[in-house]
Amino acid sequence: MQVNHIHDFHLNHEDAFLNLQMELKSQIQLTKSITADSLKTCAGVDLAYWEEDGESVGVCSIVVLDVNGRNIIEKVHSVGKINVPYVPGFLAFRELPLIIEAAKKLAAEPDVFLFDGNGYLHHNHMGIATHASFFLNKPTIGIAKTYLRIKQTDFEMPDDRVGAYTDIVIDGEVYGRALRTRQGVKPVFLSCGNFIDLESSYQIAMSLVNQESRLPIPVRLADLETHALRKYYQENKKFAE
DNA sequence: GCGACAG
DNA sequence: ATCTTGTCGC
Image (cartoon, rainbow, N blue to C red; front, side, top):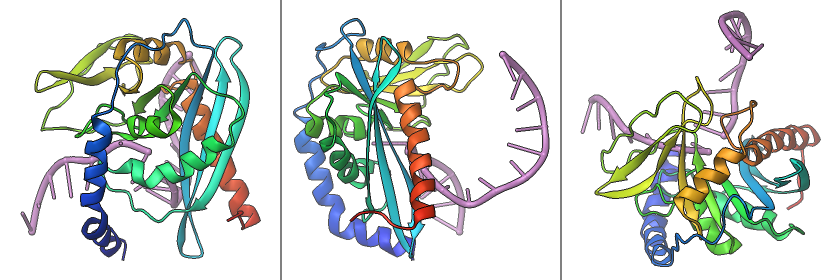
């Protein structure tokens, strides 16, 4: 059932999706337009899923945080049916519709968006963080919890010290970093989304980690929020379409 | 047939 | 991502 669905997806959309990725890839700008110092507000983006009446439903949460005060400035979310299956390398096509819908509701204009997933660390340098930047028109950063192996290149485990990292170099190019955000905890995989450079992404990500998670606070809060929202919608059994 | 596989 | 109990540690 699910397998056939994914097969149909491949037949009908993968070529078109690849073409779009290559088109956008040529517009990536890893320039230093923002640094940890100039950062005022940042947003975390994440999604959660569940089944309702035999269909996949998802909820996207965007949490905007005041970096200095560590306070939540704004929270928005979107809910809707999910039609695109998850296919490694094409996560953005599955999650972007709800992300864009939620972003439209934002009153604040975050200086940077942090994503649960890769950015430049991707087969075509077009992970969800990078892809989303073209719709948000803001700097983005990718933070993945597990490693996406590209061209059979494994990552080198960083030292077990907070802030320690190893660059992920593929064919002589730095795609991202295996980053130890907390001691004694598995590393996360950091990469530029767009409109930002890796060093700034690193500084910003590290400045947003506390004792509660290996993930930067904005992403962690968005993650918690999606779970709370899912619980709410499942209990009330209906969401606005 | 087997392994890979962001979320 | 999601399905799930207990369990180790700050």
